[in-house]
Length: 329
Image 1 (cartoon, rainbow, N blue to C red):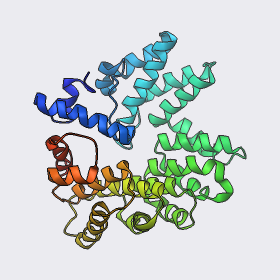
Image 2: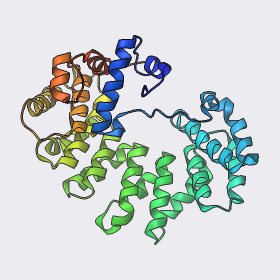
Image 3: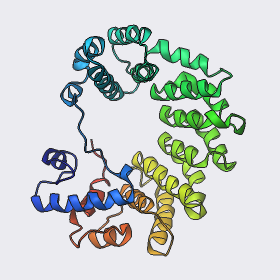
Image 4: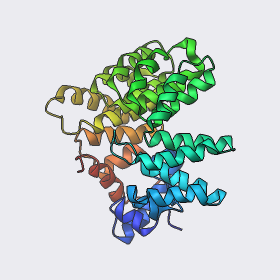
């Protein structure tokens, strides 16, 4: 049985021939053994057609939330989350839809469903809810603070950044993980110094490195590089994942960042060619970094460096990385 349907192979992976898809199935199995997070989900949403309508499908989804069965309401809420998350940055969902969801939340008896309502409202940029979360960041209960931070992250709520950066501290150990995650999701460069300081002080290093990657600021490379060279396995893996994110936004900057690219290429190629104890996930992201710096990865190099259990025909796998070198529109 194929891992994905024909449309997914064609539209997402760009594979048209049966032989390519057969190899892709083997590749999917191999990557799954490395890390399931490397693969896009194969499961479809029951309301996928409505999600595909974008903003024009919001009214129907809200109606389902208001009058559907419990299963339909949960599916519709999840679908609204997908729609709201796909909105352009800074574009809130329609005020009428958010008002309808707030009215449903006000009378929702289930704490679990109420939490889902809050997440969807945050994804929709509901100002009233996000302002309330900003106030809750001052709560004495670390659980309340963590929940508020996550909602600020879902809403990419930049007004919360000055408060969030003050909460990145060993004294706030419990809530700091959610706080750091939120700073990464918001993506404001104002968080750069405090995240760099967390790494330097060995505080929540993996979380802070991932957040630095999400910021996408090339200034974070200096903080990440020592972990690539001598960090423990989990920190090195996080470092290469973060570096791949950063390089994704600088694919066209080879002229300006030539010296940096040369250094990074040297580190990656030296480690791939040596006996470094690299995880499969790290190797995947190292190859992705090379591709985003414009390095041509032919079939033998991909097979040698990725070290997954696939057959000799690695053409589609090499194409996977080659397609990620140039920026897509």
